[in-house]
Image 1 (tube, rainbow, N blue to C red):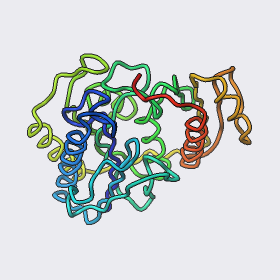
Image 2: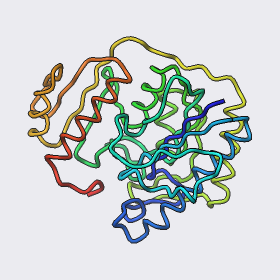
Image 3: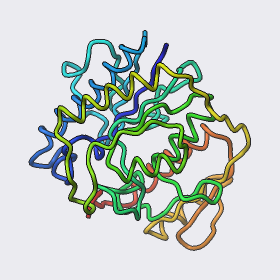
Image 4: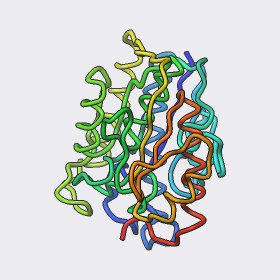
Length: 275
């Protein structure tokens, strides 16, 4: 059994603030240790369920948060950037299931450190008219490859968002949002035991990916009209309004093109993620 694990940071046990998840933050070193422990709990669960190969993709920010020496020896790590498929780099149809560890809710939701990919530069996103963030787009991309998302961990709002997309996905709430930078925390040992058990149980059961080979429409509303204007220079990208662009295509190629959009936007802006 081949398992793919995408590790974000905002939804990790105990973390609630930008200082916890940004390399310049005063508590970042503690945050990356907490991230490793949540990821290792998921790896232990996968190994217990019979996984013979676990690929971990460091999917947060600089994508160099997980230290190789801190990772469970039963996993291989994809680290650094740029990556053609960003948060899902290395995921193929040869994997049997996806684990999303440390994920967060989309922009506009009152979840811990909520945003969609680029802090407040991206105001809204839609996939076929449905509001979407990192959770929904990851799920849709994995499904297009025929790989089901088996487990997601994060705060309670992230778990609710995943359940809205696919109620068959097992979710583990490691904290309960009180606001965007405040939460009630589960004790770390309790949270990691819950992650390990949930992964082991979910992977032991049957998993079916509802693959959709049809073209989809991805639309993004940017804070900056300049970003939207420049993106219209990419073939197939059209405007909905002065700050919203859209494109029609097939996943996972659509996910890869969105990564190019973000690189264009990053070259034109200089904003901190959680302002």
